[in-house]
View 1 (cartoon, rainbow, N blue to C red):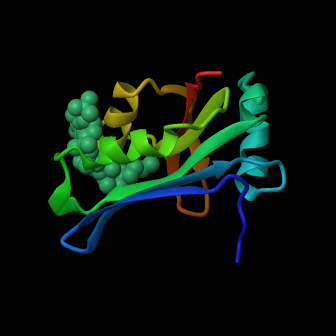
View 2: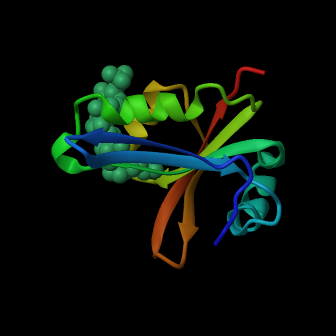
View 3: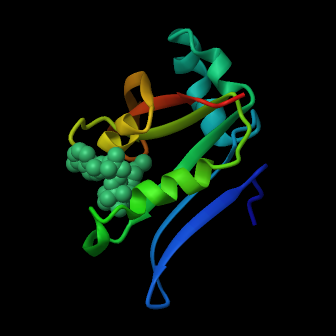
Length: 133
Ligand SMILES: CC(C)(COP(=O)(O)OP(=O)(O)OC[C@H]1O[C@@H](n2cnc3c(N)ncnc32)[C@H](O)[C@@H]1OP(=O)(O)O)[C@@H](O)C(=O)NCCC(=O)NCCS
């Protein structure tokens, strides 16, 4: 079992079936994603974003339930009560995705663009959001 510091998961249910989830955790230097992001974030002058940061690791809503406000609620519930100075996420580079549009509406901004992940042969962006500390 992989343990993550300050792991938090929220889920949405309809008729006893899960229809969406979001989870994240504090990104510590020992974690793989921290090691991968280190060099490009440093190069872009964003090293501070890897310190004392909570990352949104994954979120998704079942497609039949898109556009009903569930993703927004999951996002807001996940971050509610978290006292970090910074938040971080990675999402596909494509500007047209629902996820990217949702993040922009919720105060996220680009830190790195066209960040290539060879394991999936696709480019991603890294986004940041200020916490309320
Ligand atoms: C991204 C995703 C979770 C959104 O879920 P959802 O339930 O459809 O989201 P909501 O209906 O709550 O919409 C959230 C907000 O994003 C906005 N939004 C969503 N798609 C949009 C689009 N294509 N263009 C503009 N705004 C969009 C909504 O207007 C809403 O804004 P508001 O809360 O200010 O009114 C869902 O599309 C999904 O699971 N996508 C596939 C997985 C994915 O991409 N996950 C994120 C990867 S990091």
